[in-house]
Amino acid sequence: MSAMLTIDKRGLLLGSLASAAAFGPLGRAATAPSPQGATGDLKLMSPPAAQTADSIAALWDKPQGVAVERYEIHLDGKLAGTSHFTDYTLEGLAPARSYAIAVTAYLADGRVLRSPILSIATKPRGTWHAITAFGAVGDGQTLNTRAIQTAIDACAPGDTVRIPKGIFLSGAIILKSDITLHLDEGATLLGSTDPQHYPIMRYRSEGTEKPCYASLINTADAKGARWRNIAITGAGTINGNGAALRQNELAQKAAERGCVICIRDTDGVYLKGITVRQSPFWCVHPIYCDGLTVNGVSIHTKYDEAGKPYPHMVNGDGLDPDSCRNVFIFNSHIASQDDGIALKSGRDAEGRAVGIPTENVRISHCRFSSGFGVAMGSEMAGGLRNVLVEDCSFENTFSIASVKAPRGRGNVIENVTYRDCTLTYASDEHRDGRWFRGALYVDQFYGEVDPDPHAARPRDAGTAIIRNITFQNIRLDTVGGHAIYLAGLPESPLQNIRFENVIAKGAQGFVAYNVRGLVMDGLAVEARDGKAMEVVNVSA
Image (cartoon, rainbow, N blue to C red; front, top):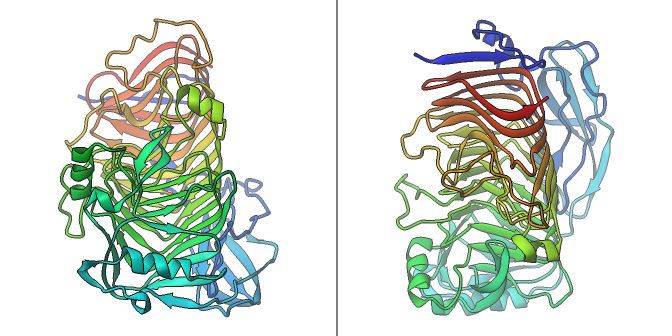
């Protein structure tokens, strides 16, 4: 027999969930309409680097406190399209031309909100360099590393390297400033499985700088300078061939495993439309980047196109922005073997010494179909702050949120909001354990087999702080473990953890250890097995 509780903002036990229908469908009536509840400024903008010669991506803020029926997007005063989400990409534009963009929101209560007009220009169209003109052969067998690199090196600022339809086998290639790598529909850049085709470079791996095999697509060591304006676009596929490459790199043991894409020390990175598959390690790893935009990208680290699992995959994260700022990820699909998106900023003393946080991150209108959702950490020693995860669906995904900082990391995770998200997890593949604790979890005992919430240790530079985490308008149903799990350290309790309009059903219910400032305003928890709530050292 299942246990049920509903808690209001006073933390009172209210009994059964008879009024659950009042929450309504997420994204429409999850928050009850309010005459004064909507913001008036949609804050329309185009993210950093999200302009090409023929497209402009636009984002705007979602009105809060009221449901939105639809958005209309206008280009130069004419209707260009509609959306139910807060992003839209205008295609087929002319190069090097300024456009006027505006958005109108039609609210469920009959009101209309209009954005200010955004004036922004497309980029000039440079020269396109087809890799076949440099000797590349798309037969899936010829090694094309030199031909592709020669095409890249031939580019002037603003030029594009084009990979046409075909399967182009390659080792590591190195991008440079002010160029675009474009993959046509039907094009595949296929990674070689020979570790000799990936020179050893020094990159950050799992939070510390160390020798690593180069990734399939890289930037070189900037030697204290910065790269700028790098784009990877198109409808083609980048396949790291990671199942075999991982085994070969582990057998050679010359360095840590590489990724499929590793862009480092770059201002203005745009990933648009591409599909990225099968990495030997984390799949897409931006490091020390400012102005990262990911639009309409599909990342698959667990299954091939037919749904068959890639063999031997471990640590198969999808996308890991690492000490990056001003990050926008939207309209994308991630099916990962591990964390779908993991925000990181270095490990322990080295990460604290580097001291570059990941900050100002917006993840919206994304779909996750395997793995562990959107994670903060666990390598977060440079700090993580100012993160919004909004309007995302999690299907057959173990968790929506994992905020994790084990002892030794230090620094702060703060100002994180997950809102208007749904999760269903009906698989028997994973259960709660030392590496993942529930569908919504905040865990400062990450990695400990049998944590003792009472056993305090002295505070030091490695004692992390987690504060100001909000979960709002969320529905979840999981058989994998806890619906909600909060575990702060006795020497560093979690601070200001807030639940608003959350309906959560799990194998187990709600656990909270060592929390200061827990707000539960419209929280409903159901446990299929065991207790609905366990609370230790928690205060409002």
